[in-house]
Length: 359
Image (cartoon, rainbow, N blue to C red):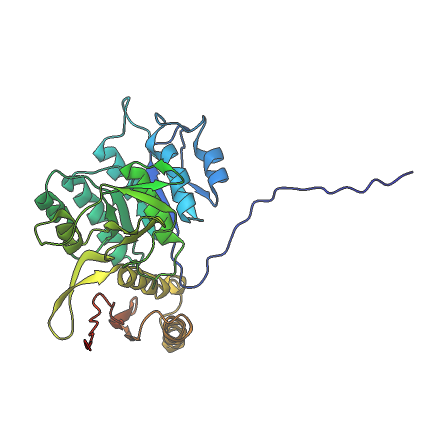
């Protein structure tokens, strides 16, 4: 019997393991064309389409369907899909979006809501984010934003003055010769962040794949809208080289304002916000719940935190130092205090001194 050589290809779902220093699990909360009764975890665009859509994705498709391609094209590889089923025809209400988002309790890193929300609804989302932070499972929001005046943008930014967002996107990106909506642009921006190590900022860094930006803003004077948005902590893109289609984020500072050790008030950079969240998640000690509250367990906790500190400082180079302590509060409670995280600064100004002679 003749043996005919052949090759058989079998598709096997791949479940990639997260790399150290990357906190890129995204939860997208939106309406999808396929009604889902529970959140679904996907690792690729193909899986997402199969799980959450039931028709070809077109301009009239639900927002969730339309944001899947830019999210994965941007670089996301680990996504939780949370479907919103509107109570009436049309887009889900702000209240329905808030309810769907705030009911998500599993561990993830970035909350993507591809809808423009009012300040009231953003305030409700912020309360949820604060609760996550208090529970040592911090999450940060990425969403589109459109407002009428510069003052309205500043008011919205103030909601996140103590953290909670990695960027509210106000511009439309053109990617692969297609102009994205503001919601899709926020999804693409989310993908770009999700694929990066947490200590990588965006200040004056190229937005890979972005070929054009609408609307292009100006920054020369403090009265310019671009200047005001950057000052408030919004990610604003500008053209660096039009011929090469090179667009960058002007400054990746966030609305989050802190007081430094020398008393100055500064905006945290994107990398700082992500790194803080990463360290808090790594310092989470939930697997010690249920253990005996004795010196042996306390010593094990100390050793765990020492390893995490070594990883964050020496292995990954995320920060300069982490100061922490562990104490037994009572028979039921052990407290791990992160007392100080020491960051490197971000260069946002370079003085070039030039001396010349005319002979």
